[in-house]
Length: 80
Image (cartoon, rainbow, N blue to C red):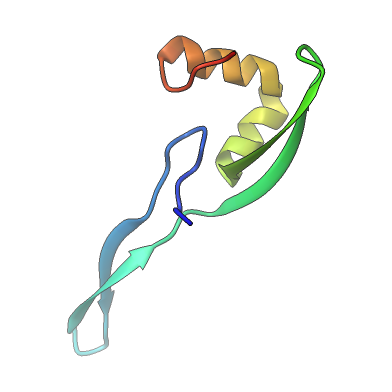
């Protein structure tokens, strides 16, 4: 299962563990993803999305349909 947000496209980043002796080894920073169901009243349907918590905050602020329209205007997603 991939660790990518379906709306924002956020994914894993790479970096280093840094020890006390300043030795560096590779590590991964995973995005904070949640599987969430949203109801879209304009389309009268439920949608299950795997989204980052920052996307959930934007949806709470703007509304799910307005946020999806904004992303489709940018060309990041396509609406039916």
